[in-house]
Amino acid sequence: MKPLRNDCFALPPGVNWTPVDEALERLRSRLHPVVAVERDVPLSQLNGRILASDVHAPRAHPPSSNSAVDGYAFAGPLTEVPCALPLVDGRSAAGEPYRDRVPAGHAIRILTGAVMPAGTDTVVLEEDCEVIDGQLHLNGTLKAGANRRLAGEDIQAQDRILSAGTRLTPTQISVLASVGVESVDVYQRLRVGVLSTGDEVKPVGSPVTDWQIYDANRPMLSALVTQLGYELVDLGHALDRAEDVTAALERGAEQCDLILTSGGVSAGDEDHVSKTLKAHGEISNWRIAIKPGRPLALAMFKGTPVVGLPGNPVAAWVCALRFGAPAMALLAGAEWFEPQGYFVPANFSKNKKPGRSEMLRARVRDGQVEVFGSEGSGRVTGLAWSEGLVDLDESARQIEPGTPVRFIPYGSFGL
Image (cartoon, rainbow, N blue to C red; front, side, top):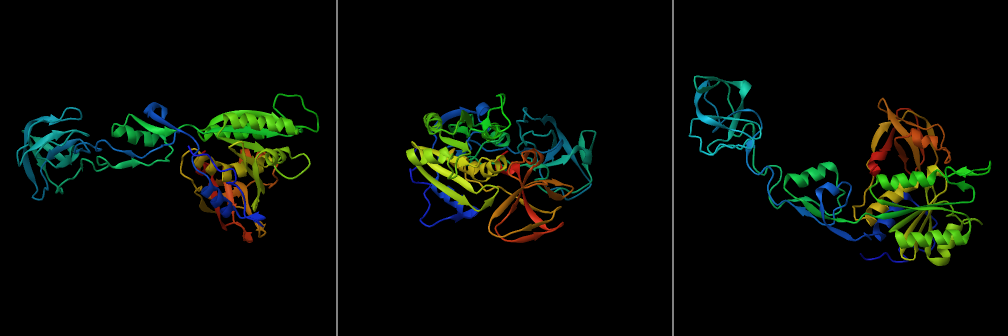
């Protein structure tokens, strides 16, 4: 695949604050798939994979007209009632069709899913008729084609059934199987490296002092990567030393298609991720008008894109979802997506100031959306409590109970 340009994340001169929508559009316009194509992957291995080319149906679905119910087939319409139709010997069952033609004015026993015999186009439900002495007695009218499924009414042969860039789900795999597609071409799984940094951060299980914290970001981001269907490369934890950060990024550049880092992306004395990326690659610090979040480092390191997330867990989570998830999808060959939200009455009050978008940890209960009690970026309990985000744009708003607000469930990000 064509690699990304080293300057793909560069901002125009004079840009300081970038609105969320503008930042997302910039990412969308500058990224493209970076993974190779894997040929003829069988159905059993397709869940979560991304189609590399359009798929066309080799046959129709259903391949033949068939009955939607158990009953009796004949040529419709049926307008003169009551009436009696003589039954022909035999029946049409799923997997055992009736081979002969049904004479005009006759009916035949038919079961759900069975091919409609020649000479028939209409089916009456068995509970709406009665068989007496070899004749079918009907009392109600029926239009032609009642209770019949037409050949190809779902899919016509050579229809495009799935498009390149589609992330395959169990239901889409069912569509492939229904028309006999055994294998398709998909993109190789995006390899995403996850790296934590900071002297104060220690991996879970390590001894800690009262000035150190356990690493919550790397397990969280690693789980996000795998749940989105990508291949995780654990790059571990790097201390706040240039040589440690450089070594970790070099491992990532060799093994990964994308690197996610957390912490060290601002301009402080110990922000060695930013310093290392500036010294050995191309970096652009996007100051995005979003809360929580704001600093987002986007860089190229030895040909590999790097997304530098904030160190606070809540900010890291929000930025990983809002910017990282659609960017990873595009790099992986999927379609760029905008998470779908819906408006729900608020069950909270808030005086929102102008200038920045805000994303509040939230969940819906009894038809109303409630938000976590604290907006602090270090309150990881709010992440576990939440089931999505309330998305407030840059404008000032006074929110009271009952005010419609936009709620984005985590499922809209692919989770």
